[in-house]
Length: 346
Image (cartoon, rainbow, N blue to C red):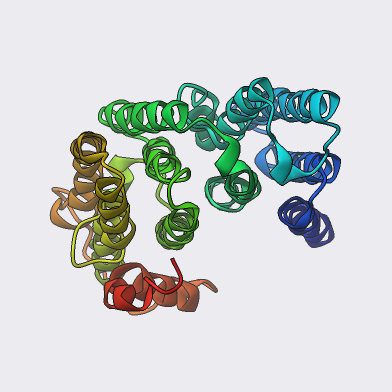
């Protein structure tokens, strides 16, 4: 793909995201989502591999269905209330349809089946966009409509997402699929709190995007797509593998790393809302995803291949993203001390 084409598609992604998150009218939000979908399709299918074409087709069909549901939901609401404003979604049927549409857009259970398949067929850099930037517009819509949505339905979907994200990631050997199930699991944490403390959802999303970006860029730097390849990286780039180990543990939500911060605040807020049982359930279910993060971390650092070739360790990787990886990794592991600054914001 030529640099000019990449520039056009990236600019379209930025445009679509900006239109959706800054609009008050449903039609504008829908147009932004459509621009986003059309801009990412060439980036998914750029390798022309049958798997990539299949991933692009699956992505297009699910996103088109979700966009149609968004439009249907907003039209139903406008028909009954005369309002096209995003924050004025009051009709119960519209709220139900919109919840399904956004769940489909995000890859939230039970509409999650497309996401691992699409991520597996896309290159790592496009996978990074699908896991972070493409989730931002639907989360912004969820944030704006959260007072109108059904909290019980969102809680059930969130617990189902955390459970399925953990269970289905257990037996995977492909790194991209593991990261897809990790994303589904994290979406459960974001959705469970949206009705009670929407700003916590945004904080969770920002920190998740930070940590996932660090992991994806590291994997892209060491050219790793499956666990068997990940086992050979320690001999080549030990420092980078050690930092990947810490970032993965942070993504799992272990203290004293950054990933523990949103989980801690969400459990605290759920307890305040008399939902201690729900908090215990989602915490126990996140142990499932902890298992596959530990497996990834184990493969990256502790496992050594039997016959390693005798060569000098690289003291620097020939990669333009090295500085970015360094900044993101430090942020992904050391932001927990900022937690006393957060209560005034939240």
